[in-house]
Length: 604
Image (cartoon, rainbow, N blue to C red; front, side):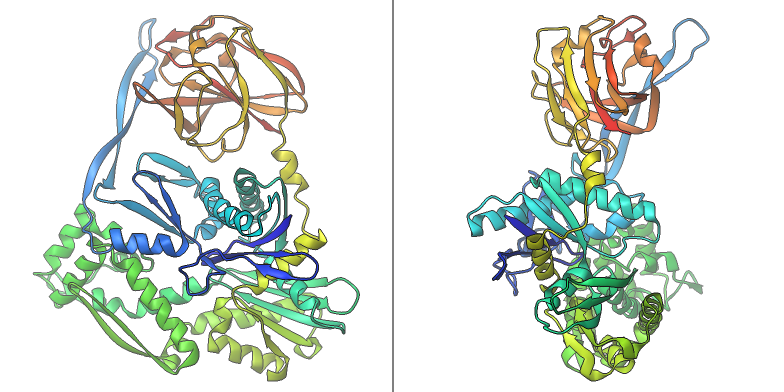
């Protein structure tokens, strides 16, 4: 069974098409639209997961109004080894700690898709576990796959995943984001994975409703991006894409503009310390609810408390204290989003928000909102004309304009399209499910974009392996929170994104004392980079491992009965062929290595 998934910044959806009937999947019964799953994840201290509306409700019930309690927490101790003046190295332990909110009952994650465009973002710590970004995406995809199989009473292994025209202007970042999506789909249990650009999905849906050939502009404006595609659709020939563009503007940007208009409640325009302007860097932290708690850390909070006595607006300083210390940012942004939606159908909407010292009561006129986003409206117009230029067309060459995505409902953009193309050409598709309907059709037709490159990257290059001991070794795909050894109930709570998804050999831990020079034999079917994840407590490495390079930016941690231990990562490139690695205590080794190493490989 083949399905289509629209994995969105704000909302996600799934549909199945059997050639005759398009079936949207019920993903979130408590939601106002149960066919849509808000792309929210809530993970509590027991690592139990809730998605969508349940995630939002859990966060609002357990976190909103709770005062943040910062404390330093030890997360590890790393052994530092330096060359000494004598024959032995000098080594010492360095404690690693972080400042964390010890009162948190759980973490809420929103807009996971957006971080795929950030090459610096690899994952996040949630209590004592590290979640690489591919595992976060997997959580959402797994939940949707389970709903499909439960409702259609069938196993689903094939998927077409929607993706924006571009995640970034950088092709390398685009490829990285798509690779992460592919790997997450594998982790979720899909075996046949392809992609399609989201606006092209919408074009496929409209294509089936038109008997005549038309030139369509798809205007797909969601929470994270705007995608513009010009395509020939309708008639008996398949859709033909002429030009496509991705614009890094989304509904979340418009929400932030409304929030910006509320800064006056939290210190904008206030004079502090006898005439200085209120620190603008504090206001910068208010653009998203996720960054607001940073101002509750001891240093900025102490200044905010001082400003309550030494400023021209003590009430705003008390409101700011409430906002950043009581976890009410998410609730405020939900009210902002509700107000934005209300302005779709009315010329004025009220924004009312009361919590402790925060008392916001605003009447926001649609005209004022449009002034807030004026530059975003102008950016969109420029890109509309750019995609027309890419296609070698003028507005009069477009027969129909297909609006989809929640942000396409904003009246300023509706008016913009009507002014450029004419009222009669505009067609409104279902803003939340038209893209996924097209993905389901693409899945049925088998016309998704090939993922052969990612498939090859994720195929197992280890043809065979054998350890010199009698203990069991097994092939695995390396993932966080999974067992590290075949003979120990030890897990991997910290695994860097670069190692996530690699094919590996899970060893027996009791072989850690092996001094064999040719302990682990293996065969590769193509050139590979071989990684050795070796315990960090060695004073000297075995001679065989000294031919590897230390990956200084990578570190793995393994939980054992005696605590959590750091492992360094070493790499070396190998051609195709048969090779061997020595034992963890082979010649040249000295130190206190009492856990076995793990080998992983990446095809080159």
